[in-house]
Length: 176
Image (spheres, rainbow, N blue to C red):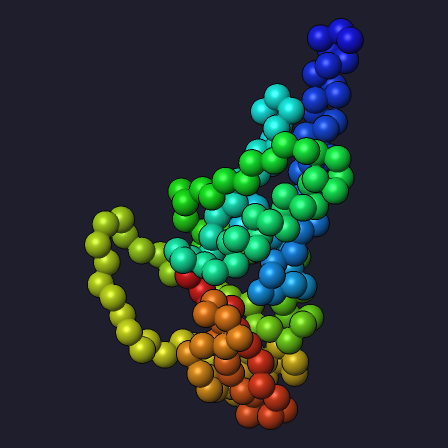
């Protein structure tokens, strides 16, 4: 095989591996892919090995082991026998990494997407506990007349809210 043909085959295999990895869904928010969530950072071939880099939504995220396993399983099933899923912590994940498509999907599933992630200075920052978020628009009816019921929803990344207009509960992905 010529060098050019080898380079083309390598680029094609890498693009295929990336496309496959981009279909893997988040175990806690299964309507979103890891790509749409912004957790999937890189997919590349190093020789015959597929290297996948993912970033947790927060340190200690309990879903990381399942994400790694799901990525490896999906890639092995597609014919890639050598997979290395790596955790990358820098730059840290923020809710700004969620794609526009991901934000639309959250809303379509009755989950209020996060607003912009808070901007923090480098180094130690003051810890603010119990800060009340601004009113959220209900993802079901659009009303801004909502209230937070609980700081924690089904996952620690979400909070539970209720719309006073349509009286329906909904979750909100917390900005961070």
